[in-house]
Image (tube, rainbow over all chains, first blue to last red; front, side, top):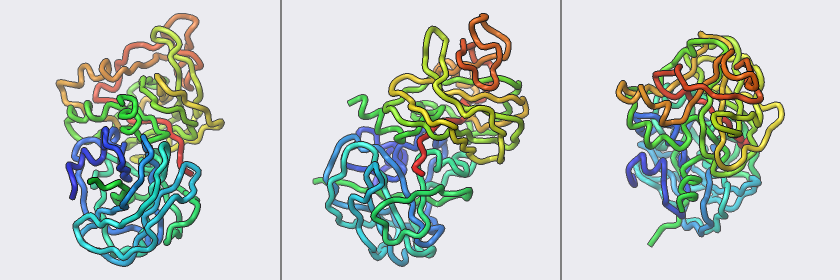
Length: 181
Length: 195
């Protein structure tokens, strides 16, 4: 794994790096941890809207794999209108308990962008926040600008987001970055 | 650079009662957030937050506790004077439903939350209604309200030009010092949802 959990969730001052859970630390109370968890619904895409303080040219997308890998995922980035900027395309999930990098060259504009992730099965695992329900209850993710889309593998050209629903959601930790140096 | 940091630290299109204070206030927690009864009906609560970017608010929300009762109202105000705030928009009276979940309430007319200093507000008409609140340790519990900048409104207090009711959220409010929620800040907010 890369760095301290709290740092990854806040990402204060870091540039050229967008991650699915950035900015949620204000509402995540103590006992912040992460754990390996299965993907809850096959082919159901997860969306996370984040703020990009400055445009940058990304070099890689990534996902934090859990203890079991399976099938194929797709990672993408959408602009503020929900139009796809770039995506990895269907990629075999490989490497347990590590970050899996996928090279992807694209210009990410400043402002509101939406990160997308989808896995095509419910056997593969990713790292997810393991905060108890009392810390981060059902539908808090909806309130924070997360969403989903029913059948979206590979990722669509345009988002059609809907609610994550009234179930506790294992939301993977994924992102895009300009790797440097 | 300071501005950019503030923007980057928050979710875009999201303001909560904890916006911008997580790195400070989480250090003082005694445990996970706890379900907390409002204690007195017809009370409204207000917290000043910094909004780094204007956005259109589509929903108000609160983290319901283990008991739901009566009605809630969630809104946004702007500061218009010393301890005085004016309403920009609110959900209106809405039945509190579903325990231990985040209840999202659509604004009848979405409205723009301006950048800068704004005030989030929530009101309850029933004393037994509960909301999740941070559980501050004893040493911090006595003064967190002043640090966070949180006030409340009694149903019948204040000068005649102020609203004389506190539920639903009044158009104009003169704030009183906070006395309820000694445990810690209640968790609520407004958002622009992705869908």
